[in-house]
Every structure is written in structure tokens, then in C-alpha cells.
Length: 85
Image (cartoon, rainbow, N blue to C red; front, top):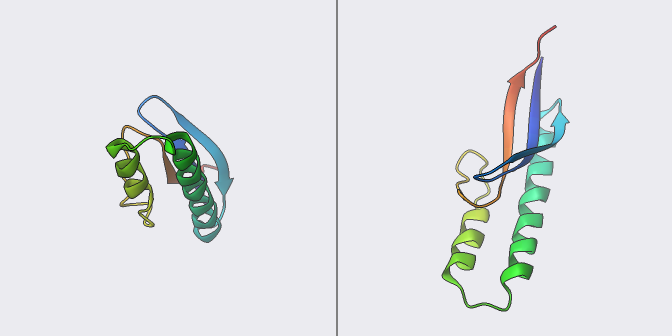
């Protein structure tokens, strides 16, 4: 059986937050996490005119989990795994 791990990773950690049985549900949660990261990034950098902030938000606007690349900063992930019986 396949399961889908959803969470946040960066250059120092991976935080798996959810496990789903369907890819559709995992994608919905991935999108919610992506939006949360954009909002948090905007809040943190709102008082700065900063090229890094703009680059991070540009990277987080990618809506395809397989194309997402925000390394070394936080990014949502989906990882498909096969379970063993």
C-alpha cells in the first residue's frame, strides 16, 4: 500500500507532519503548508526590502511539488512510500 508523507524540510531538518493514504489529500495539505510558509515569510520579512525575501516567495509560489526548489530555505514536501505488511 502507498502512503504519502507531507511536511516541511530545509537544509537542516525534515519535519514530517502528516501521512495520507491518497495523493489527492496529500496535495491539498501540501498546498496549505505552502501557503502558510508564504504567509510566514511575508510576515518575517515585511519590514525589509530584501532580494532574499523576494526569491524565497518566488520559489514558494511554485504549485508543482516536484518542481518546488527553495533550498536551503523551508519548503513543503510530499514523499511517496510503499508500506510493508
